[in-house]
Image (cartoon, rainbow, N blue to C red; front, side, top):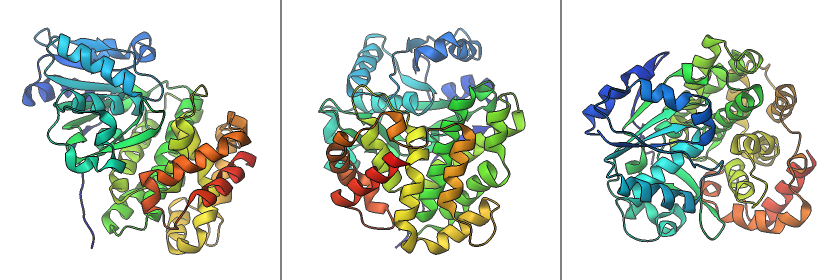
Length: 379
């Protein structure tokens, strides 16, 4: 049985940030907490958000979002929200800021430990209405602005998923101008995050043809039409930035049908203390190994993916992704990112429990993940 769900309202175009004030008013928000990171404050992006709002809005800024959001950071932001008597949240940034914003929206409206609301502990049924949340993405990769999920490193060290229709932002303000000038490597890493979302969604064992069509369109924009490499080569290319933000949004729309082992591996690696590994880069590096592992179950999907990428019939998609990673300047392996053999036991255990495993097209247990990590470490 197929369940078809497509998310939220997205205001999408160059200059869309100018609509933020009206969106806040229509959602009853006058005292928003801005969840963001210090890099975007220093880059002047938060000033652009201020400039889009009149003095009738009383803004409170939380800029301590870590690269991978943590439960501690969520609790700190929730305390700021309560002390400032905020009445809504505007998440400004990449996936980390948006995921943190979702978790804050949950925390300020629900009692109990955050880990008990995670998907692996039946949290989907426990999450009700949350504080109103508006998302303003500043990278083109995560798609969190239109997704039901948030990924947070819990106090016990596990990187786990909060998932609920209530966590979907009420409105997404998708302004590609906010991504202009994003550095090449971050453009590449976030762009491959979007690509991995689209590819894993198309390959997911769940049945959802509309989601497949959306995911294939995202692959076509990013890779088939070459907008990812164009955006990496020229950070001021407005057409490339528009199309990559669209591919990012489409990736999250597509993964309403689930993800797979790539994300289970990335979530595990992202929980490693000290390394601070970027999620999109991890997805890019893990994707070829997982495509090879799943190959026997996804042959028809791979044909459609290859066509969307503009490849000839019979092309090896995993090899093409590896070559693309090289052209984009991304690491060739997990080993090159600092992952070592003594970490595999922990990583395999974490990945095997991750909820994304359940929609991978081929079943994967701890031993399967250990072999996948070994392959991805070698490159």
